[in-house]
Length: 260
Image (cartoon, rainbow, N blue to C red; front, side):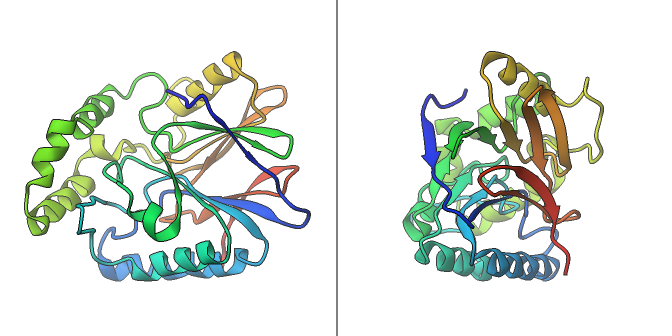
């Protein structure tokens, strides 16, 4: 379901909006994750001077569950840098992904982040965007869609909440790593237009409503494909293998790779 609201962002001359997705920090272990975290932080430092907004399209963490007084330990470098950007007046838009389904209000409180659970419409200058993480959209993927209904069920969430954090967070990390349906991303190569559910979703949405750009994460692939004469589907890729990101300068959207 797509939110009916259309958000508006005016981009000043010389400023840009940046997009990143699927960092999965915490995976496969703390040591290897910190290497990627430092690379991501270096990128954030480099975009800070001209960024007027930052979009994080989900799965920033490989597993995330918030209690009222407890969040998973770690990630202090990333969260500290995001706080620095927020304190500098750069708004952060965060789309909940399939690995951080259980996010509550922690990032809202600490970073003043805008948190979204469903696809959103944006008008940036005169360009129309549809933006989402991408999990569960389009046809097929029934195993994951069924599991997502269970995990987002209030009763299931309450039962999980009653577990001690030491056990529940261990369990969540284990499921996140081993369950292909929770991942929703067992294919790491483009499957062709007829099998790519997000591409098909972008086509279907474009037939209902005209967008200039339809931007998603989730697939861990950097993709740029036309879905209409003046409309393009972008997938942002990831910060595990590809280290790709999106950049919108107020006129054009482009995919780029961060290399150091």
